[in-house]
Length: 83
Image 1 (cartoon, rainbow, N blue to C red):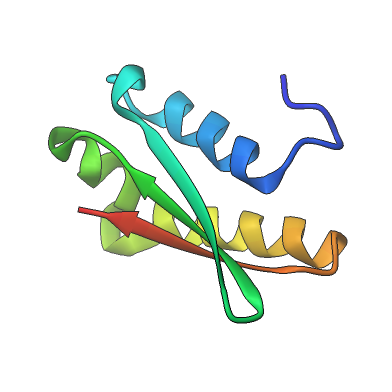
Image 2 (image 1 turned 180 degrees about the vertical axis):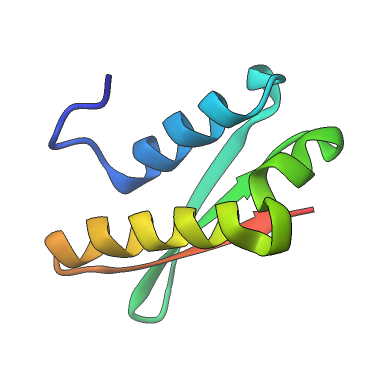
């Protein structure tokens, strides 16, 4: 389980690996862009639909969780899903 003090990057990685079947093909990268931290999520092409979800619902939920974690840490985060 994720510790309460875990980074938002680790949290997104944990959730993504729980969703997809090809866990070894989940890659996370993080970089600073202006005043926010951008987290890039890359999964296997066959698993992309599971991460995006129907009408983007899963992707929106991941972004909401990331935003909530960022507000708790007084930082801005953005999630980019790499195709």
